[in-house]
Amino acid sequence: MEHFEYKKLNAFSVGDSSGNPAACIYLKNGQQLSDAEMLSIAKEHKGFVSEVIYCTSLSETSFRLRYYSSECEVEFCGHGTIACIYELIKSNDCLKALPQISITTNKGDLIVYNELEQLDAVFITAPDPQYLTVPVSVNDIADNLNISPMVVNNTHPVELIDAGLRTLIVPIKGVKDLTKITPNEATLKEFCLSNGIDIILVFTLDVVDEKSKARTRVFAPKFGYLEDPATGSGNSAFGYYMLRHALWNGKAISIEQNDKIVDYNIVKLNTADNKVLFGGNATLKIEGSYCL
Image (cartoon, rainbow, N blue to C red; front, top):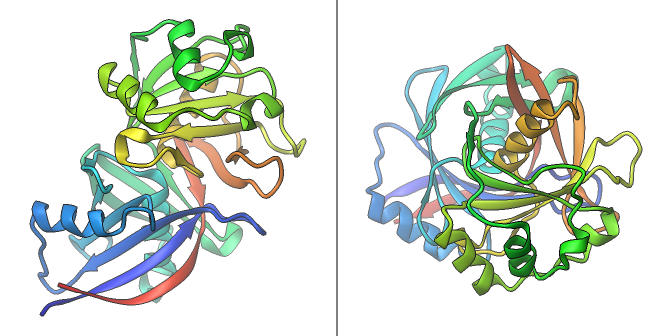
């Protein structure tokens, strides 16, 4: 029986908010897992965490990350990256002293900025964006989200942007409208699969805290769960969306996320070298070994 270092963490949690859970398995001393084994472990975590993250050391300052939901390998997982790397740096004095480290993902090489001392957070460069053609109408989107088309805010466009995951971005009029959205998981999953959509991000500029920039929710039925309560990849796509439409000047902002009027999670966005950075921290919930 082989033992793997295991930690369960909640990313982007603030105050009484629950954050977004991720399970992290740190492969050390040449440990390896096959694709089938990684998917099998992720299937065991269905309903417990959104994704399982597998972290392999490439050098003292660089790491390879892979992500699995209970359904499949995920090309990129923002909250899982935050959870895994925040805890990795926090628990390693050598890494804690470094201003940045690098990670390799299926979406390429990314930089992690260490802001633990100043902000108790890590910031990660989002993958370069791809602006894609929206394959569906507003009426189709509204129907599959189980909302009236009148709830969609036509002041801003619907867009499909890939900044790690193909993210359909849908503007909603107000925060009360946004928190009341209750789609059917099976219906929305079929809609996403049929149209090449990984996740759907709905947003409004109507916020609870005036210091926040926007409120978002992210639906991800393709990956085996209806809603992602705090996400880096979706909000990174949203960051590029805001820059593209002059809704954001690129300076540090906070995004409220989840379906609660209060006790929402916070995802931080910033920019560096014309790239969107997403950031936050994580709360350690379980620490031990996974036995295979």
